[in-house]
Length: 636
Image (cartoon, one colour):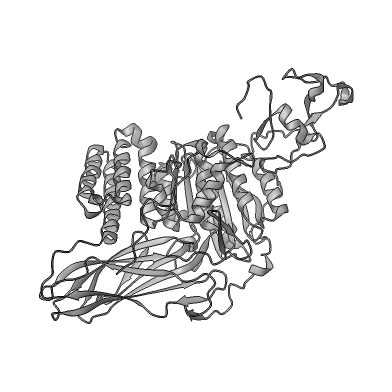
């Protein structure tokens, strides 16, 4: 809706705007609920003849409508809020916060499973409603001459999480039964400092409204708002009808002023999840900020330096902390003035992702993509073990990005801690082995790969009953062989990620020319690979992403305003192999789409096509593509 054009605009306290004459029919019979976000209004448009107005008020007719067109005025049914300059935020709840946040609402009974109950392992022959994690392996080439040894021979391990067994595909849309997926405990930590005033805060409220409306009655939400200080707006509570209404009112009551104390907001957000008495199977924090942390100083003698968030975040939620309380923080850097390095650091420490929300209008899409994943977790605590299948074979390396790996001293066994996977999410890891000479004409076994995970609903451990075995042929003579497209594609992804990290390091030291050179060299190297010659879509997208990064390193001003955040968001995405928002996240040609899952695509489509509850015609909005690369061929 555009202002003006001869029509007066009514802006409700929830920040949604309407033409006076359009909203008349909605409220004339006493309806005081916003038709967009369903928040209850304390201030409502009032339709009445002049004689009926209280206190002899004069009639207001800013649109110069006829007498029959329901002249409008606004009646304040409650006294207006008085702004307290000493108060950083004005939440709907004013009660003092408890010392311990153990006042979380009880769980939905059908999902209330005791976290401490004894669970037993089962194999995949059991009746696991979620299915099993698919494991496919791809050797670099299918044969190696028997008389020669081959060091650093590459094997790709590809994982794909199951479709949620309770998903039903209908007209290309995913419909998920609320009583069958793993419920979520979500804490959103929101920046409401002075720089968020105006459009930013309005868009944040709208985005939070979308999140609230898409959480189910078994999911629980708590909201932390921070500026100079941080405050919990409401306790961790279920998003049933009552919970949604109160959450919407609390979010819509926010105002923006004060400084930016990210550390305090994070402490309080983590405290909500750490102090809770009961736990839903999935727990996460979403953090959004548009500025620098102006309150946390860690430098010597009070001098400002980059915040050490590792020391500020509770150790118990650090990834690989060994506490069993993994709480990823998915960080969203909003606009061009946020501290991208710190936000990225927070996400890395906790095992979450960092998204760069460059354009104000896509903040809701970025949130939608994130919750589309969180609301579709099908397996947890995924662990891959790799064993040498031949006594003379050794594993030389495991390349898994940010995922924790271990390798035995003798090189005969390794493992990868993968963690949670969303429905149909994929992971690719490269294992290199040293292959010795072998008897001619025989098939040589290389590796045995097994996968184990926990079902988030039943809490049972599921262990693959038979390992996936990798074998190659060892003939006396081999003809020239083409490297596996799958292996080459993932080599390119890792090579590009390494170039991004190297370029970022150079840029941070002020050497932008060298940073651009590193990215250009990587682009040239990619262009000569098997994947590039085959016009593989992932390879094409990687090249385009590297070129975009070069342009964002054109000079110091451009790098500071957007280049750093763009590169860090890319590194986060590739290191975790998980979708992040980057720049204009609605650009369907970008690599942002490479890691999207169907659940993410569905949630983003809801965000992009729902305006005032009605879908827009297709040409008006550009939807994301589910994948940037073709379907994987089955191994031979």
